Image (cartoon, rainbow over the protein chains, first blue to last red):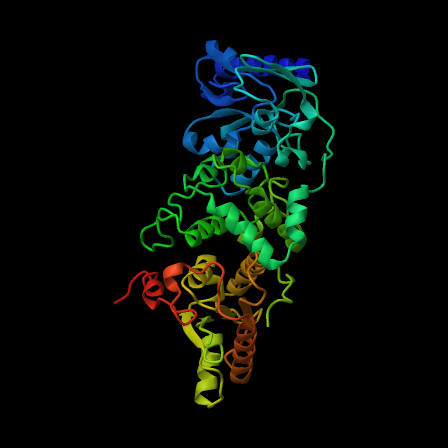
Length: 320
Length: 162
């Protein structure tokens, strides 16, 4: 795994340098070394001599498609995993950029490692972490732990069935086998089995931890409204309070606005500083959209998102 | 106290069919329960899911959205678009733990005064069975006698209130 990451990293750097040198793109968006162990940061590179700052490993968790909104006047080369590539497709369907404006460097994804699970697995502060073969080596002041990489994937990565970028101008690295580790996350399955009252209690409890920092919104590539409903003062949909009802309101609408647009990358959940579970909301919407309209986000570059269109034969057994 | 409790139900009626249907029920003197408060909207496709959520948050016990039958939309496809939104929103709210039937949908044409009164009757009965809305209601919206709607907070939503 480690050698594979290394090879991908080298090819990303090489390709990025080439793209910047022949002026195919003005800017490269990729991953760079983060300030903390187990973290990477989005890196924006314009100088071909600085492309060796780009890295690739199992901690490249951000969805880089989020940053495309800020650079929609430039030609951009971007490193995309399977989920990022689907977000790019979903965004181009919504006409967020011109088709020839992007150069996609697709990386078949090895699934990303959940830094929180790693932190919980060791005692003490982690000072250094790196991959070694199929293992993650975590070091602190007084310990050195070796963990099996396969046990520490993000929930959204465990269920991922599109690890190979669906659309890419160049594929960096060999395609991987497409099969989810688990069909549906056990916690979500359990949630769906509960009674309505218990489900509401769970939702209430999860959303009550929210501090309204909107990190989930900022991390999501599909959340790009010029004015979000929470910021709008006329009409004022929602109060700027931490009352339980307002928190629930925010979480319902944030999730519901993703209907037929969410790629399930899990960036919202990863960004949450309070570790609130969010993907059980969007995954439900994705399943409904698949069931009702047979639509999966970011797969097809032609079909409009389900709520932007209609079919005369849509189900209507719930309407009196 | 539960004997005295009467649900407050917000009905979003489309201007071209359901509103006219309600009007017909009125002129034909067809009786229906007085629990609904009507908001006239241009089309059932105009319903922003935020309207429904805001109503539920403000202490409304039930929401009815009614529009033209498929194929009858004044704007040709508004109700088809609305139908997709309704289907996904209803499923999502019930998944979260809202009681089934808190938010309901119907097609009522301008000629169906009888159907309108029947639909309202059914909705009121369903909501009475469910009891006053508890989940999601903002605390200050709850009065001492079950739910109490803050009509002002709903009024504020309109773009221009004279």
